[in-house]
Image (cartoon, rainbow, N blue to C red):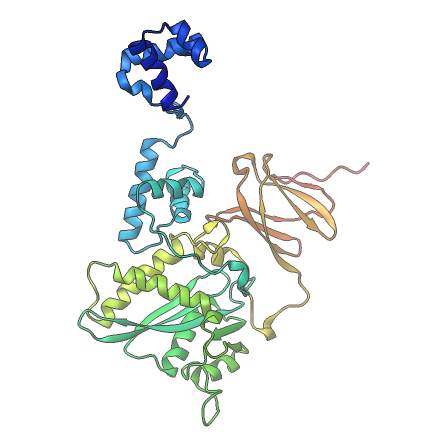
Length: 396
């Protein structure tokens, strides 16, 4: 009932002198409603003119106050550290560090209500982009360098080697100026750390390739790649999005560097900060572009690695599958045209996993943590692959 009708009824009774029955009959209302209205008027006065809120008195499904406070705390801590602090990242921290599963949309609404979200212009939809992504670690390494100014105003350059598939930062180093020799030497260091990649992807800078030089030849990196049978790929001129993953890494890195309370005054101090960031980025920071926001090292360590073309073994069948353990603690896998059920255990029900399949050998790892859940050789004669080996059936 609107404000004017309630005020009209109350006025007719209190000023005109109508009884509640007469007022109900005159204005076509129920006597019970008029009685409740007058009882409210005697209790609240003119507040009875306004309709009551229909909001429920209690919200049993509302996010607990302590959780809201924790979300706000995480937001401030992540931003102060120069790390991603969006709803996706906060959701990952809540689930993995505080055992509080909460939808991304709920966290975003809480951040908005707290005034912690800055509206941004709409971005180009992801469907409009043609994305390339390697399917295995070491299938492609991206490399690029970016500038960073020291506390005393000196310009430096930071060179990065990044795995395309897992976003694993293999080698990140600071230099006064990046040269072709430095690129070759850091590539060699990256190979000692992570193995030989099948290919590299860079822009057309002279430190990476001399194919557009006035006197074409091979620079230090090109000779090294040729020696190791590594395919060299270069992006088109004026198309930096081709190396988008390493470009994005550099943005994240520089955002973190600028947030540090003590800015580096020397290249050695900058390198110390780079080492700290790489450790955080690879091992603890959830990555939005990876399955289940796993840290890069989780996937890089767990998955089989690609090899240069002359090292591939065509006689084996290797593949990678992403799946989820069902409520009974089982995951399924088709081998040689037959479906097999692999027992993992009910304690891991609904866990997202990665299956690393090499012929009949299967390794099953937790997609978020990298924990090895099962390592087995498929018995092609059995449908169900039990957790504990079973004795062979006795002969008839």
